[in-house]
Image 1 (cartoon, helix red, strand yellow):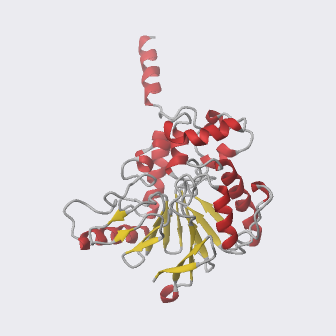
Image 2 (cartoon, rainbow, N blue to C red):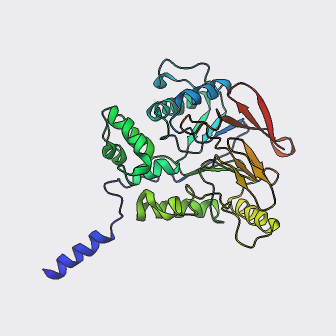
Image 3 (cartoon, helix red, strand yellow):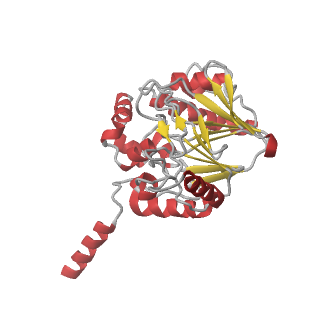
Amino acid sequence: MIQRSLAALLLLLALPLYGATPPRNWGRCPATVSLETTEVVYALGDTHGDSDRLVKLLVTGKLIAAAPASPEQATWSGGRSILVLTGDLVDKWDQSLKVIALMRALMTSAGPQGGRVVISMGNHEAEFLEDPKGEKTKGFQKELKAAGLKPKEVAEGIDGGGIGKFLLCMPFASRVNDWFFAHAGSTKGRTFEQLGRDLQTGVDGEGYGAIVLLGNKGLLEARMKPPWWEKAGDQPIDSQARLLGYADALGVRHIVFGHQPGNYSFNDGAERRKGTMFDHFGGLVFLIDMGMSRGVDYSKGALLRIEGNGSAETATAVFADGTQQQVWP
């Protein structure tokens, strides 16, 4: 009896520390998404609970025809284009539920037109799923409670509105042609296939707080002071070579990420100003979190529009006021 009790205790201690978060169906909700297309691709960084500014951007980019009467009524008008969001839909401003409703509606309505909306997870979504009472997601929790929803039930995927199921099914990264998209971008040199396996193993074993996601160099959490591809003692050529090696391992030419809206310095003397669309190393890396939410308010945001192929490929920032700026090449 004592041995059986001890065995049961050890089994309990070995269970993942993510409460009642349900096991993920990796067949239905894969860790990564890989697509090939000849259509225009759009990317957008952190919306952070600002549905109003999100709608203006999507109207300007002609991905929706007009502001919908309610988020659930949003209809895709982007044809066969692909839109990729790199996570952090929630927190910082008070329209997280509207952002989620809007994007869920567009995911549904894009398909019949041949389009696709890919929404990958940010650190705020992962932190909420890991701990629906945590300090960093208080804003989202407050919205859920005001809407009559229990954060714990949402994190368990059992709320009546299906919000939890949507969050729990988010991929963590995507590859479209030779472009890689993820919230913080740090893959630590994994191949795309290895990244998918490690993400699945990490979430199965550690929950949504897994090191591969939310560790200091995690895919959703890696920071930029210094940039996650730089190491102490690097010469600029060393850092660029390391980042190029990361891209080669993924089978891409470009790495695109959000998560970082601020001022950043690079060891080759380059500077990124807060709230701007920024590329470095000749289009090898793009920073697309522009702090568009009124909870950050560094800018009103921009879509990154990617079109063409080979030597004719371009990346253009499409701003909410309708102006455009070619970012690369």
